[in-house]
Length: 242
Image: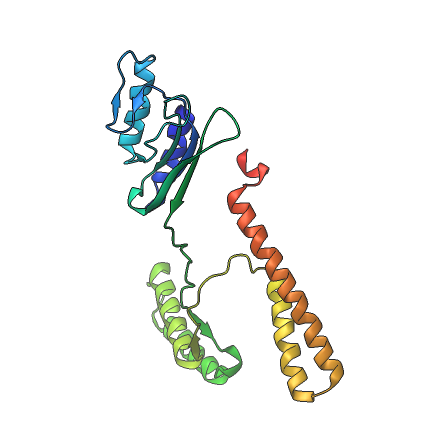
């Protein structure tokens, strides 16, 4: 019970997290149709503690049909009952029936935040050099009675002014993040893009074959990386549990 409560604190403590918990909770004393305890319920305190946990985290138990010998033991608990599309009790392969539930869930994809990218190859370095020479004169003219903090603020503001004035920037594109694309796969995608441009430029069959080979490798690796990422979400690495 304490482990269940701790897990809910970690999950439901974050904003807008969806909670779905399911399994055989073995609380036969609860009448889930009206959320009351049945007469002659054993372990009343334990049943009430479980009910308090659900109330504290705003959770709803959605199974209302018996799953074993007239009792509702196998539960589906969620904080989004309005997204439950269907719940059905099906025959099981043991003495418990199967709880089949459908949720309306739209996956959330994090969009990459737009950021400014400096175009250093187009910067006016000569102008920046002359600007910083003027900065040195300004700092020397302040005399010996200027504090280190004031000198630092002057230096910081002037350097930023020079960057904005002599180095052009472009804004990155805002696109949906694909967290499974990283490291070597990113580099291979860039090599594939470069091979495509090269094959179009030269028109040689060898360059086209090189591009097609890289293209098939990228498609294969993307597929593998995506499903590995999904597997890591569903089945956490054992090292992460320590």
